[in-house]
Length: 116
Image 1 (cartoon, rainbow, N blue to C red):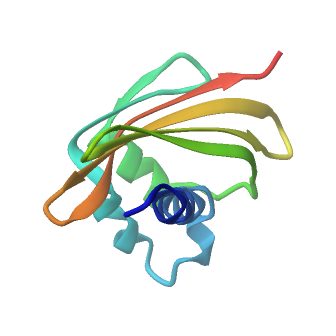
Image 2 (image 1 turned 120 degrees about the vertical axis):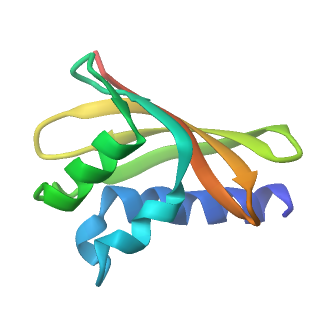
């Protein structure tokens, strides 16, 4: 993928994760997480893949708006996405590390930090 194509593609994946209520079947989101996924949450808690999937399937989604989305390719199969997300509760700065494995992009790592 060229950089604009990669940016658009990863943006669409991030959007799916931020708006799981748009999915007919939330389980369709599970393949987006790599088996070794980790997340450092805004709260400071650390979640693994299963914990995030459980939360995703049980939680009520909060609408979020993405801004300043930018993708930096780090290697042929690795990209770092950074952006801001605004919900009704908080504005946060976020980073996602994506890896291309098994013929698809998978989220390897995600971190959110409350904006000052």
